[in-house]
Amino acid sequence: MSLDGLVVPIPTLFDAEGALDLGRNAKFARGLSDAHVDHLFALGSLGEFASLTDAERERFQEVVIETVGIGTDVWVGCGAPSTRQAVAYAASAETAGAAAVVLVPPYYLHPPIPAVERYYRAVRSAVSVPVIAYNIPSLVGYALPPERVHALGRDGVLAGVKDTSGALASVRSFLDGRPDGFAVFPGDDAFASGAIGAGAAGAVMGIANVAPSLCRELVRAAADGKAERASELQALVDALVDVSRVGPFPSTDKFLANELRGCEVGFRAPYDPLSTAEESAVRARLEPLRERLRPFLGR
Image 1 (cartoon, helix red, strand yellow):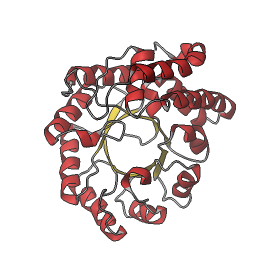
Image 2 (image 1 turned 135 degrees about the horizontal axis):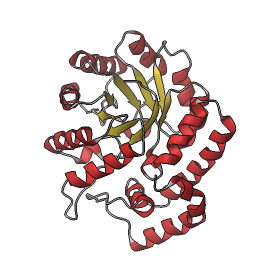
Image 3 (image 1 turned 90 degrees about the vertical axis):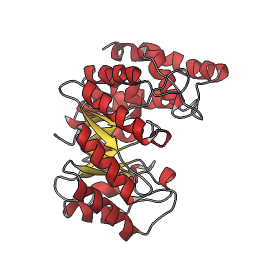
Image 4 (image 1 turned 90 degrees about the horizontal axis):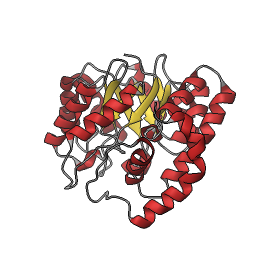
């Protein structure tokens, strides 16, 4: 398995009563696989991982992993407030067939960095698949220091990092001084082409749930050094991301996947469906982009 290319952090879909809908999730995952994305990232932030019970997590990851076709693999988010819980999640994900595990550091309470390092080492000892750190200080409450992440990379603990800090400078700090073979992925869609141009292995793009072909072409153009084409595609991605920000996260991403790709989606409180007013506002912002998006939809 290669740690590069387009990574799609998938949503978790529910039925009308808010129960986990395995059929909808399987169909959604298969649709992205059929669009030839490289990796699905299950149970990340967009996937509302904190909303699922342990039993639901197991069923969800198994269904997604069993559903994807050849050419697409599945990474599973396994971060947790405690080391014991994270180790259990990672072991379960590997047993289910995950190609990699992705972990935010312990959240809510903020342990000292040496304890965070022991957390990642414990997970590394428990699984044989690659372990990827996930830096998202806005939600975790603190940032992972690049030099400590690199040290864990040199020790063979971490295979890479996903940086969703909201700043390209942060992505560059993980690129600068990284060990050989250490994979860095921007988690902010807006930085995809710039980060890949600077040496990132690929990009994690939530908007790929809405327009997978657009994001796939952008990542490939950037990786192939086709800067002009990558810049052109990045501008369209940025405009679509602006549409997604008109309504609440992650509900608006689900709404747009339904609106543009016809995907059957579903919600669980408190991440409710958009109100009528919110739907109207999103559609109004989307309308000027529909013609530009047309070539990337339906395939």
